[in-house]
Length: 347
Ligand code: KG4
Ligand code: ZN
Image (cartoon, rainbow, N blue to C red; front, side, top):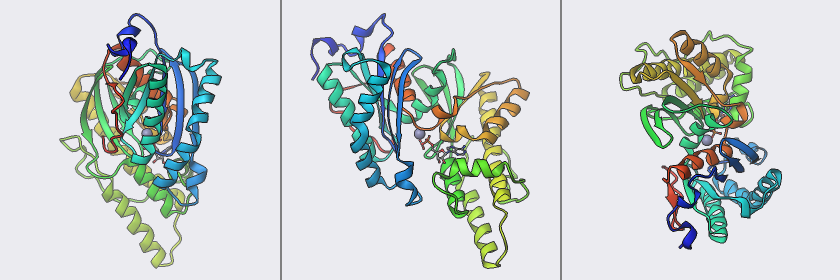
């Protein structure tokens, strides 16, 4: 498919700090970024939040169409913000899963087109690994470490042994934590996306309501679960509505947040203890949560762990993290994709 230059995959980049373009379109952000090593040259995010807000959540077909509308202008803006042209890009990394099929396909198609036209290699990027790699941007962080990925679609604890070695140590058995945050927000009539709204309101409330007791503490298999807690909050609100009682939304948010986060923090620390590793990094949209950041930091440091998390804008979906993940694939010559690359919604 490729010509001479790329037939040995990333070999032509040896000894060079490649300029990598990242493309992300797995859910409701169309994003393109350019990195040189760990340095961000540009980072463009076109959010669809305003489009989906009136529906109270992401409408997949609307998301795909919106990605199609803006992807080219995002590529153009990322290049002009970086002061570069496509000739300066050494390779392109694209999220090929997990995510919404129609949404993913827009980014995958755009990335393939650029690689084909410019004869540069394509890197397939797992979205969750991308979230973890947000922690490398503008930092000195090196593997090994433990990473907690908490987002709208995932809640998993990883052991990251090398730049291309990821092992799942524990994960949710049902819903993702971000999904639970969004559900609670919807029940309280807060606007989409709910996580940041629950975060804001929780600061005004007290964790006085016991929705769902985790009497057993950390599960021995390091698994987590959010569907029971979610249902308990649904029942609490419905029962109060039926009795005509007022709900203290701030207390609901504070109580839900501490129940959702406390066990997650304990489970992450247990995973870190078992691994013998000393660094824990946070990743994913829910890593923006102020209670989670503070709790993991205090509990972790108390036990001698170093805690790291990305700046808020790199926690939620962006393409800088995708370019960062692709960079370590290119320099270690893995995750090369040819033009048959397809989207993998449930990767
Ligand atoms: O990583 P992300 O942008 O997309 C996925 O890969 O899923 O995560 C989005 C999720 C949403 O559920 C959103 O409500 C949640 O992250 N989120 C938060 C906060 N900011 C975003 N949840 C709690 N507190 C926040 N401050
Ligand atoms: Zn994400």
